[in-house]
Figure 1 (spheres, rainbow, N blue to C red):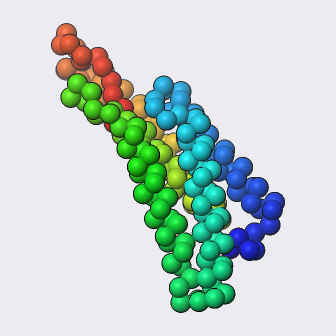
Figure 2: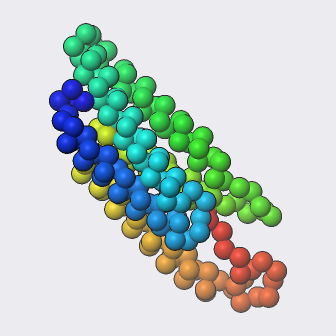
Length: 167
């Protein structure tokens, strides 16, 4: 709970959220995708802040009405999920029959989950989610490249056959 969290622990949580958000954002930035480094850092930091706030609300509720202790935290978490979902929707575009930005939107949602985990003090979960996201993004890029190279459509001279999208 936040009442039990020292200033140093809060600083560690904020710095960890910043670092993990930067890791996710750099991957998007490196591939020139929408919502890169700055956005992912802000989403992760904001979610970590809301996680810390949820902890404080839970601590206060435990003292006043233990039966309702988890309600404030669950409402904060629901708000973060919905808010980041709305933010992610702004990264999704429909162009010439293709949908782009889905991976970036999902990555922003993941950044929020990681930030909440950090803010709530679930460091192992935050690290596992970060590692899973990075492994998934990097491995899928390799697999997609190989599929694209071997696709019979890629060998045809069809217009737009060499265009890649971010799903």
